[in-house]
Amino acid sequence: MALELRKLSLSYPGAGDSALDVLVDINLKIGTGTFVSLIGPSGCGKSSICNLIAGVEKSAQGQILLDGRSILGLPGQVGYMPQKDLLLPWRTLLDNVALGNDIRREDKRESRENARRWLNRFGLGKFTEHYPHQLSGGMRQRGALLRTFLFGQNTLILDEPFGALDALTRREMQEWLLNVWSQSSPTVVFITHDIEEAILLSDEIVVLSRRPAHILERITIPFSRPRKPDILFSSEVLVVKKRLLDLLR
Amino acid sequence: MSVRSRRLQKKWRDGIPTLIFLFLCLAVWQISVDFFKLPLWLMPSPAAVIKAFWRTRELLWSHTLTTIWETTTGFVLSIALSLVAGLAMVLSPMAKRLFYPMLIVSQTVPLIAVAPLLILWLGYGLLPKILTVVIVCFFPITVSLIEGLEVSDNDLLNLLKSMGASRWQMLYMIRWPNALPSFFAGLKIAATYSVMGAVIGEWLGASSGLGVYLTRSSHSFRTDQVFAAIVAITLLSLFYFVLITGIRRLALPWLNTKQE
Image (tube, rainbow over all chains, first blue to last red; front, side, top):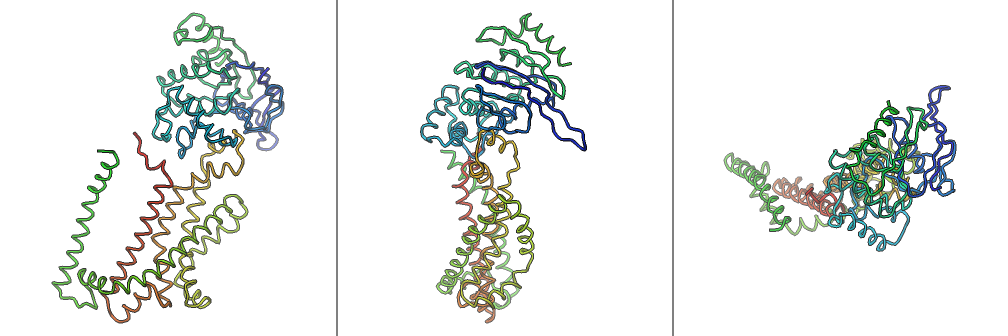
């Protein structure tokens, strides 16, 4: 078992005695190399789960285990990517992608070589020396994803990474992400609002309830890989889609 | 033709109306002085100012050197002090609570009241002039530095935190580069005021410097020389401004590249 959430609960102290419950008893096992999407109503606490796994937030009950090791409140264990690309404006694309290596104080030349290899392999080789503001939204997002891949290595938490992109770029990015993922197949926890995106990308979809969030259902997506966007028109997908829409209603 | 040289050419073209306007103003000034036959001690013409500038060039230069020395020392000292004070106030909220209000109050005390005291306490040497420069420059540099260091984008800090960055790494990877544009804006303001700070110090008592040249010329009704001193002070201030702008270009390469 790679990533495991055990009885994870989170509540914020509210005014007076009332506390705001965000997560209630979340139990989830995610196998190594699995692509899992979390889907749920807005504001249900999906991002809180991300923040907890990423170690940015730590005030929760329960446990988060990565390969059996507790990582609750321990940052730097997984690759975390929020919705905004958050590339540093004063770093070139190359230096942005190698940010994690710098934080781990790794050898500069080696990390830059490695980053350059990845950028070349995934179609950004021409833009290594460009600053973020010189790149398109899609390219920035790719850069941010590669940075997350290089940092997280085996476990990635992607919090609505394509939420801010237009529909066409989004579809392009989904295929690109599948391509990158297939090269090293890390464990991925993917947050999204987009049902089709979840179906296209994941091995399993976890549906969360309204706040306080608990797991409503886990749906396995049976299609083989590599997947083509055409599968979205098949009748099996329509059944899954209908089920998801009913659950989210 | 390269993009760079084309951009340079455009810059020159954009500057032409400014130059023409400046020339027109000087012409109106020259013609008015000639037409109304204004005496030299009341209002010198541009030509007379240039003549005075050229005639006293050696004297003017030796005074300018003193002022450059005071301004540069005071300016560098202000930057060093601002770095220490700014970092302390950003890293420790307590330090900010203690010193920030004092910083603002200190800026409201009129320089013209403090400068004579400095001369009273420290004599007629260079030190009180350097201190007046520091008093003038320290505030804009420190305030702009603090503003820049207090990163408003919490997501950026959160990202670094999720990657396990230390406080120190967050400071030099995020806060410091984020502060640079604002820091340089402060430096530009300080640069334009710095020469004035030194001149005010000299004005109140010194043996050398543009302020001394100014008082002596003024006392002997050499108004053309007063204007020549004004020109020298302006040129010197511009020199510091251009210097800072140049350093900014080198230090902030990500702001010089245009969107393609």
